[in-house]
Amino acid sequence: MKKNHIAAAIDDDTYLCGHEWAIKSRILKVKTKINMYSAYDIPIATVEKGDRVVDRIAFNQPEAIVEKLKSYNEDTFLFINEEHNIDRMIADWSGYKKLGIKINTFGDIQGVYFKDRVDGAFGEREFPEQKMMLPEEKLVLRKANFHPVPWVDGESLRFGWMCEAIKERLEIMDYEFTNHYSNYNKDKSW
Image (cartoon, rainbow, N blue to C red; front, side, top):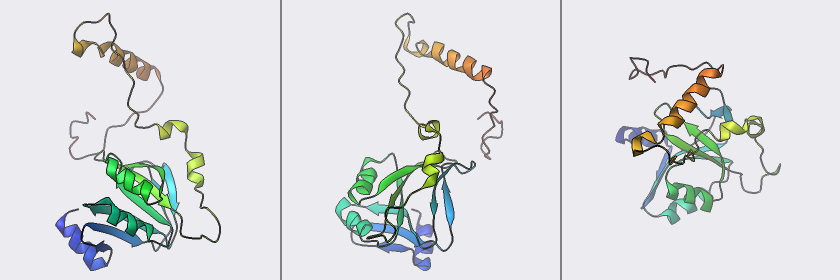
């Protein structure tokens, strides 16, 4: 978290810190959706008015942040760096369940986790968005299980045939591809 963001969060009273931890969280004032991507309407969950959203966590030792995350009495959404094993471990230890991932325009992968309030009056909260997602949307970022073929020599050439096969299949499909909308993509190459 950048210094100016910390200062703004302290001013907004959304920044809380202890000796070995810090949390930026807020209570939502309006209902909103969490989408998988910035530019596409693929909802992961709906955040209701009065829910807590933990936007950022920082820590030296996981125990202190786990205790703080467990202490929230409202329905809580937690955003973590999904590629960081310790962040995922903290979400698990704190009793949060994974709803999905959120990917921004920079390619950062944030895990979206949720924990029900203590002794919820209406039982466990459900997210109908989870049932509407296609299975392919949940597999959006899977590591491909490519195996080199023995009949092609040279490490750089071993996967070339597979890239060509994928390219041919994509050209056959009737999908509309778009250029990435970014100031950095002036040549419209990605």
